Image (cartoon, rainbow, N blue to C red; front, side):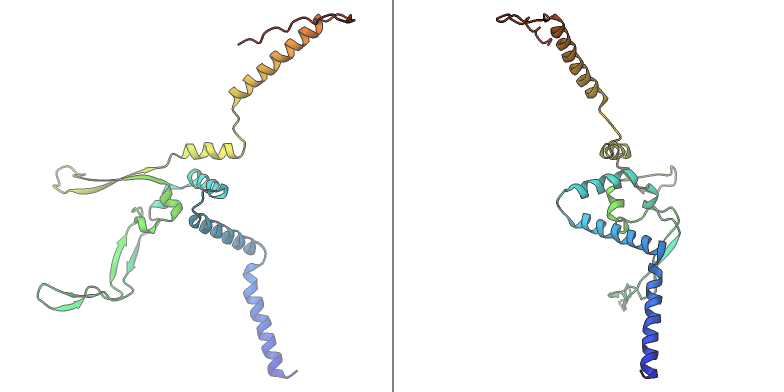
Length: 213
């Protein structure tokens, strides 16, 4: 084998080790779990049929959603990545509506995220949005835009999750069934006790007591 060929094989072998290294041990397991969750999420979003997997996923989202995900955790800025369309100003001069690299918008920590930035799971935690135009601060003469957001009732989804895992049992129905079975057993014991030790041919058994309504 020539030296250049041996060097190329050694380089490919080393490159394969570098690529495969992040998939070893715990990192590989974590990456695999993340990949599975991503594919499940994509399938749930894509499927229109309400099957078992989609139903369980909706219960999980309703029970485990975090309202903090609806707000920015850190302050930040967004810049234009392309030039805007031509636009004429008040003096009749033409120019770009905006230029690449100019500030598009900024936000502070704790600001509400726009709806188009929410994931499907985050958006599904919201049941209604009400927009109210009113004077939020008395005396300033400003009309403010107030958003009223109502979130899904978490306790309902937690109850559904508990029932799915068999953690909740209908105690009332269970007690009624035990009472009915116990009554039947008591009746059978009473009839058995009233029978003679030896039955004579042609002798009739005592009548069965009518069931109590």
